[in-house]
Image 1: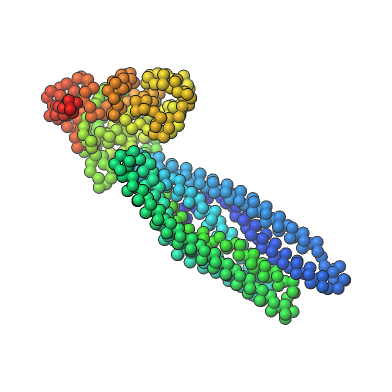
Image 2: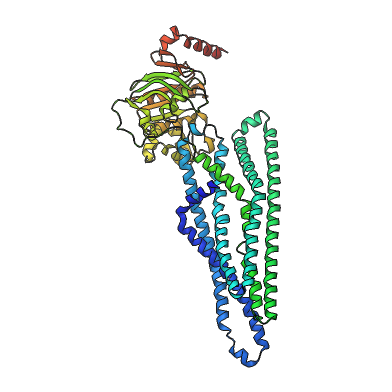
Length: 584
């Protein structure tokens, strides 16, 4: 329940829209109550006057009740129309606020803080769970608040005319508006939560299946995935069937209580009319007014039946929103140092308190303008070193400085503004070529973009494309070849005039001709920058280039490549292994 209270506090920013929707909904309910009650009295009174003497007919005022009937009818229509507009505007604003809130909490977590989450599950939290929470105000809290206020007014109005009728109406509304919703909440909470859990799991599986469709087909694993999703769908149908049955029972119980309350009001009115303590025309007023009052509580049973699923979604959203970021940001960064030298001393880093050390006593120095190649097996700490330098992961022990300033004292955005990264997994968005280039430099005009494309040797391809810079590249750059995708990432790096360049296996998976051409472009990009190259391949390392070989999160060998290849302990073995693979 605390998550729902927290959710309402977030929604408080739209308090004016919420108040407007509440007042309009209340006016609509009361107008419908007044319309049916007054219309019942007016029709009965008119009929009774028609049976009376001519003098009594002349005394009866037809115009005032008729005017109020029109007033209530008009108010009901306008109130319902305006209420829908205001309620949906409030809901859309709340959804926008909630999505902005969650995205602002997700951004500091990426990428290291979200490494253990499935992309489909994250998408489900950001879209489906928040969409479900948009119904909390519109379908639960607003109807309940309106029903509570309207019930007191309507029961009090009948009690003003006939106390026993008002008491009967209050009892009926309490049963239909509290007891039935409470039973629906108790019986529907578990299947409602199960529906949320099953749907989220199915979405994650479907996203995984779509992203890995080629592998599923290659290994003939598609039938197993299909069976898994089908079984989840069967469980989902079972839960939804239980919820539908509960919804039917709730609606039936509410209708039964409404008819019983109307019958009680009618009986009370008839008894009073027979004893001449109540006018005959007032009997329909009591009966129809009692029946109309139940419009206020009609949506509550089904709304509270779904409350369990809404609470589950709120818990999922706040669970990830409250996750502590992997890096603690200072309030502001110090002035940029004149000399940008990287120095690590006995750095230890891990991604969870119970995880092994990804960097375990790493010490190294990278001077300004130096070109350094980082070698090592998978898991040796190469990616963790990049995550450390880009402030994606926090080091627990040791010292890591940039220009003599501890990295912890510099905001992550300020650190990353000094780096350009080209890797084999540089993400390209499902937009146009122009969109993907402007990620690196949003203010770049077309001339700047074309210069970057020419530097990456991609300009001819883009000019030949039907839409030029506006050519869409598809999801995951599906419309580009591997080499074209790497060159687009390279052009993006050309747009960033940064002192540091990180090359993380940028030519992995390319054919030899494309690789050789791309390496020439990378050499142009590297001029005048401090370059950190991460690779497994030794064939393209210059003899005089400095090489650092990592093993188990620390430096195992370091020196000029030519020297390490001759006198090193590990590098000669790696070189022989790669040569043997080439000969195979």
